[in-house]
Length: 70
Image (cartoon, rainbow, N blue to C red):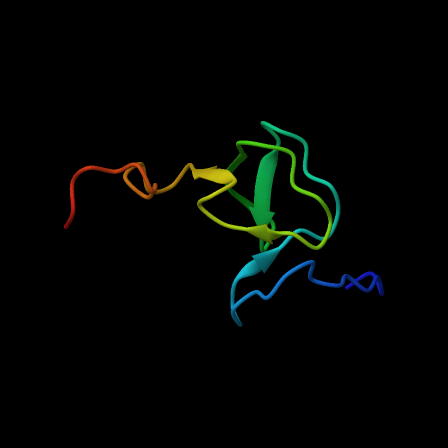
């Protein structure tokens, strides 16, 4: 870690992603050094990063708008 402290801007469940810095719309979302998707809107530092503000690049049907349920 780089020693920075990030304060969550709202309640976030344990194990979910929080932006460490501002992520611009369309920018890659990186977890453990790998891109897992891209931002669909600007995400502020401390905001929850999940399906409401990113699109997945590794599971195409992993969206809230997905009609097909498995």
